[in-house]
Length: 340
Ligand code: SF4
Image 1 (cartoon, rainbow, N blue to C red):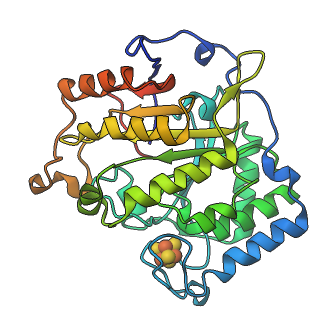
Image 2 (tube, rainbow, N blue to C red; image 1 turned 30 degrees about the horizontal axis):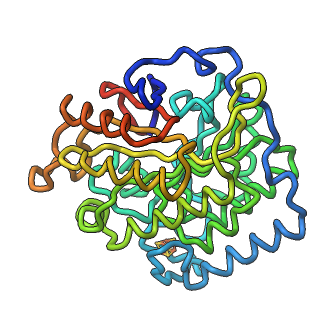
């Protein structure tokens, strides 16, 4: 998902683009990744713990028990080795992530959700991608840093956490030092997020639904709302809110909550904003994405989401935002596309 023409939104000035640090030459402060502080012993211990959990996999809330250490794939499509679709510099993420030089984005293959509208379905649902060694992935991370990336941005990482930890450890030995972004649907197990505490710098976590029936119909899991809300609270506990330094640059540490507005379901905006303000913080940055277009199985008219958003739906969401009490965020314009 990308943010190509973000507008800042502030409570009380919702639709007006804000000319602030997002357009200055220095957007993001330089900082080393939190993982630089982790001892080798602790890092190795987390990697071992993560890999052990793939014996009968319980890494994500699916808890499908796949014997991934034997090379068998689980419901998410992932087995033992890292599986990656592509890595490159992306300039379309939120300003604290893309900065001026781009985010070192690693699009992973497979997903633990089954969203019928996924714009990245060739990799997430059809599992396009290349299986590779941990060493090759580590080299890719270093390549991204050498190209100037502000950070390493793992997209859809929940089902490949052991492999990502192992590749980070190897890359750190080769000089990797930039921050880590965990770009997730938030369908994450708390015990897996615990393995990332002190390693991830920026959580880019979705809150896709506030209604379990809709989540079941569109993403195929019965408990998305309770899982995602619990996960976001844990992410926020680990990294807090994005802040700015004295020069007005984003400090690369904190949680950003993404909300993709779906046609016919824009009424969920009120509960999304309410959750953020009551259970996270009013200072939390929220990224409202209105660029939805029907892809993959969403083209089926029976699902009721085979169209773009209307202006009325967008205006309703932005009005809800203005009444939410939240003070930081961005909105992606309707005309922008998403995906890899
Ligand atoms: S990460 Fe994949 S294999 Fe593991 S429990 Fe989730 S769906 Fe199953």
